[in-house]
Length: 131
Image (tube, rainbow, N blue to C red; front, top):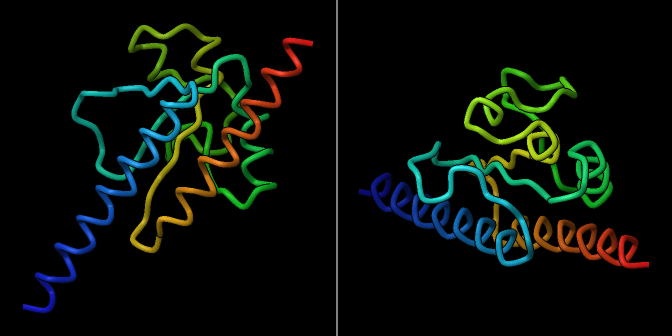
């Protein structure tokens, strides 16, 4: 019975964290890939328009957020996602995509930290472009 309660609690928390991350990024200008489609339950792929994935990853890392610019099987590569390109997205947008994965240990504070770091960079880039 305890396992069922813990599993239900974990699934509820994961859904809450997932929805919070997706909604938080999307509300602030992110393009969410596969939104509304069936997707892997712990992974979110999002692009920050106008900002290269490598720039995003450096900023996220400096703010304590771990993310990747490609699939798990392509980690370490710096080329735009061939999967996103096969889905019809252009190479530029694919090169602005970052993958976020949730694990069993993630908490609401991790999501807040990710959204804050994302918004900080996005706002800063928008101000630079406007100047």
